[in-house]
Image (cartoon, rainbow, N blue to C red; front, side, top):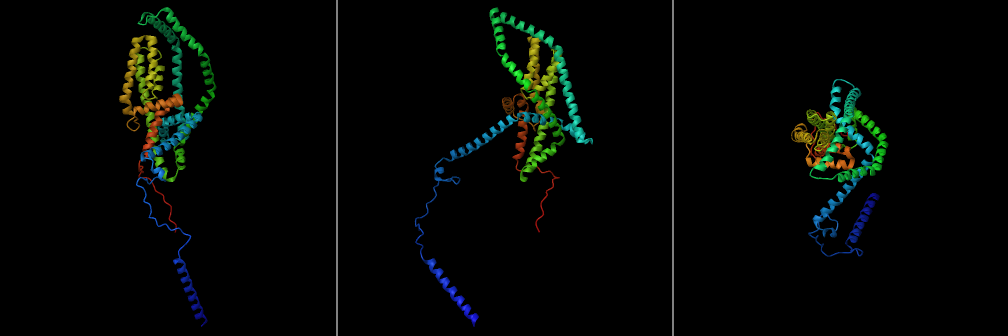
Length: 415
């Protein structure tokens, strides 16, 4: 009976509580504001990307232009800061860039020696040793020939200056002796007035000898370790990025490295052919310093399109001083012929489509490299453009090519 009484009491209390709650819900809230106005429709000119009606008053094209504008400003500021940073540490960046070019050139030789079961360090050391020996021997031969023929060149230069003076008097200019002497005095005064600047340049150049030596050592050590441990270094860099981006980044890096190697080897071959062609013409025409001038053409050919032509101009000037304007015109024709063969046959055939770059991009890149870093900038501008071209194309592909030997590792499901 006691349990029945408690149940009835609990049911009665529950019923009263439900009735009280129902009365409170039906009672109007005096504090709440009731808005009987219908909802205002959204204007048709409000774009979904705007946050207020003020933004909707701005034309859509102007909003897009502004969005592009501030993003381009941010990118420009970042690029400017990056260039300033590179300029500050150029003593490190330039040697590493040269080391990358040398590594791309010498990597096949190291790989061949390693396939012969040689240790990596020994293979890299042998390639660097013989490479440095070849470069040192070439420079020694060039310097010796230049020093041996310098008296002859000086005599020819003096005779050439006298010929120019006579031509100025008897040629179409019809200059008098006083005018010729005045021109010579002006040139001498200009040299004397710029002696201080030339001397200061020499002093500053002498002050940077230590930096040059440090840069040469950095190139040597960087090339050695890039040839020996380049693959390990690249894998370490790739691991610093998110997992989802590693495969695409590794694929783009491998393709860019292959492009750099193909570009450097093709450039060396084209430069060698240019030097041989112009060198044969110099030997046939008996121009002094044929080997040093051919070596200069070889070095200049590393700057595409303009390098071999500019260095060939030196050979034309030497021919003009030593042999006269007829032989100089023949040498000029030989330089132009070699340039045409290089541009229309050698580069498309040797470099191929893998590293093909539009000539406008090459010219703009070389000009920008000269402005930013001088001769070194001109040397590394075109290979940098080739590498970026290949890397960006690989990164923008939707699906990288996954090799058939790739293994996908997944974590075990819990439980």
